[in-house]
Image (cartoon, rainbow, N blue to C red; front, side, top):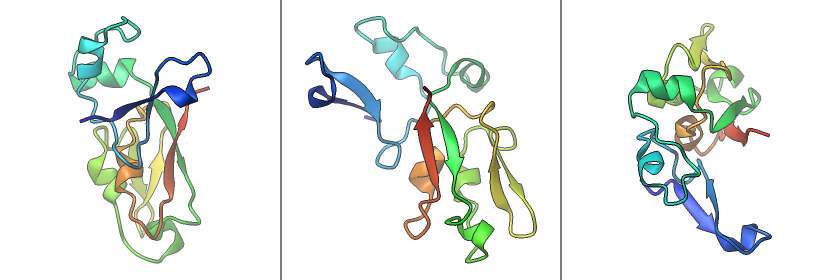
Length: 130
């Protein structure tokens, strides 16, 4: 999926520092990167969703309700819920307009929600884990 990008200008040591820009290309949690990592920086993880949900944390979802179409009453969306590999655990819909509510302890941080959030809103971002 080419979600992992490399940019040596971001690495002060001059090496290639991998990163993901979820807005441009989110991770699909296939775990292929863990199978082919040439440096063993990533331990192999099975692509089974239950295993991924237990072992992977790429980031934390942050929702700006003031931008979200559902929470502001400017529309009905649900895209973040539909693309989430872990609906009802990582994200659920709440209220009459079915606004998203994220559970950062269940979310793997893949960024599919950030990538799917429509242009007028851009209400979701995945924050790196510190």
